[in-house]
Image 1 (cartoon, rainbow, N blue to C red):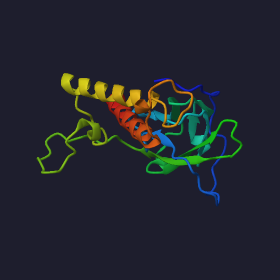
Image 2: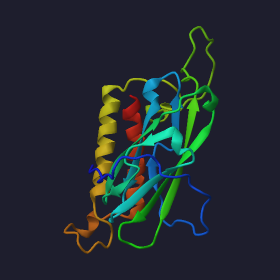
Image 3: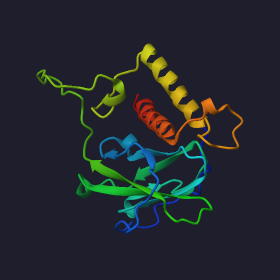
Image 4: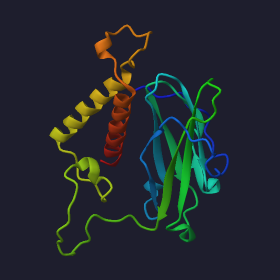
Length: 223
């Protein structure tokens, strides 16, 4: 997948205020939907937000925060090309006990490059600092009957993920390639496309493909 053209690295510029009266008209696809930082695991102090643009136009974005002094955000502003995505690296830089359990929020705002309409979409991402990372099962703890999702795709939030089997890995790769292909196909009614009309897709199909790619991204990052 193409990567969007990033802007310069910087911290979130300001706190965001309450929502304005006019509601955004475009959904914003950012994965993961929440960030969890763990004080006892240094590798978790750096998290990646992936912003997808499944639309046929360039989008400009900006990342704001309710606590800008606690975080560093690389490429807090920039552009995302059509049918592309960009990784936004966030780092928690104030790991202190008094912040344990506190939930801050990032807000990702997008608007059409050169469109003149202002912000057309926004999404809030909660970010929480935890003292320790939960383990999947404590040593010596008795077995308990508990429902768990059947797929590794949804088990990454339960603790330490299981290693991917070769068959499951191949399946994820195949699904990812299909989703990537859907994102690269033109939209219905695009006059610039040279492909047959049967190969055109709808906005909903592109959004579903972007959502699937986001889930797969989380799986591979934590595998």
